[in-house]
Image (cartoon, rainbow, N blue to C red; front, side, top):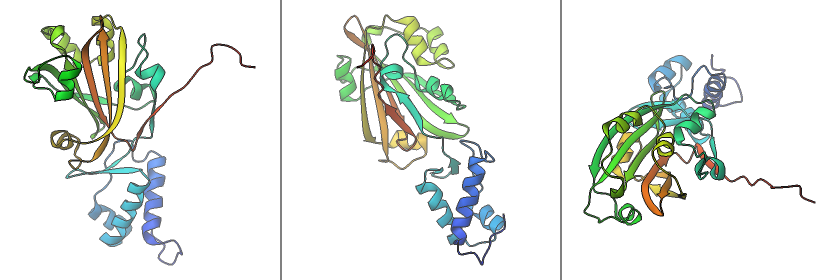
Length: 253
């Protein structure tokens, strides 16, 4: 697109509108990296200041995310999850991976580690463990193309026992929800949602500033009245929302 320098529309706004159109027309796919500032300057024949003002518009309107040291990426559309049916439904709850796939978003999971770690105090309290007792943990990151969108860590209660390597291998390419449903007799799901400042180690994995506010979904899975798994998911609050839908059991008059 050639900038119209005689237009009443500011040049930065023309650039923002053009990039927005390209995003909406899928010329830039979800999670795809946009051209760098120098390339945009060359393409539109404008100054760095003009390009940055256009980028600010797209950022404020949530079309793109800027990743530190990585560049600019196209945001996913708002991802909606039904709390009662998808998050807390004992018979058929879903994980983050399945939710994205259901909404037509191509997501990949990177398995980070299966290890033993000292848990935070509140996690130790949930699983009735000492604060100096290491728990088995699973860590994963979710990506849309090259854009990291969520960090997931799972803590296993000491009552679970040593997890077999076969199950660990399944965790690398299967939704955690399916494994829980296959391996445990689920009795109850306890859920909480909070906006938390991102710890430094997680911020580095997600390429965001430390302390950046993220939506945190915590789910505790109960078997025989005892917590055995705590799942923590750190999500972008810009592109993720939870809804509650209530269905009537009969006709209303």
